[in-house]
Image (cartoon, rainbow, N blue to C red; front, side, top):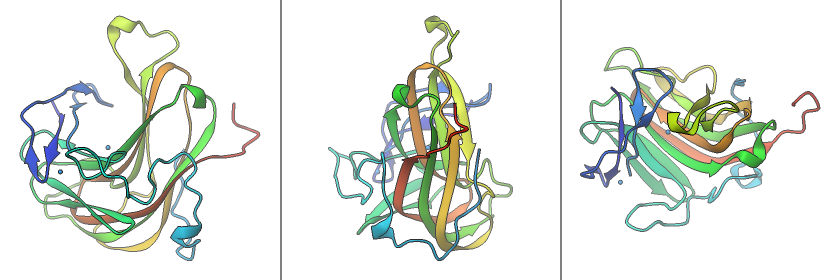
Length: 223
């Protein structure tokens, strides 16, 4: 069973927290040092001009207690410390340093008030990716997850994944040119919803992220 575990400065914390994942065989727990659209044109707006919308700390400036950032957390698959997060200026990077299959940098927020709304999660990404460990475990790029209870779910069954989407196409081997990527999605019906926005790395190499944004899209077709 896959799991997400906490890490701090490349070292794993002693405790593991398991939670349901998007497939029956997967689960996840935190680690600290998670409708898709094609990438936006490379000549997009400068990072300073992008509206962060609902994102907390879009410039990666607010330090946490015993962790690099208060609003952004590093997670990875259970096992040895295999990913590290680095903050430099107004950019954050995610780098593979071990063998575990995936790592993410995530921000989570309550989402009950967003049910039915069309949102767009986007960020400027660049980096260098390899494929030394074979086929990627999952998509590399931006990802969205909505956890919670569906309209007819029983509390005793626990929260589950109600939505999982990634930016398309998934980033592949080689240099990743600096440009904005985006995931557009509709928040599903439910209660006690938690929205997780992630930069996800499932290949060798390193990805950098700048100017993250979560905007409510004015779309008359949205429910």
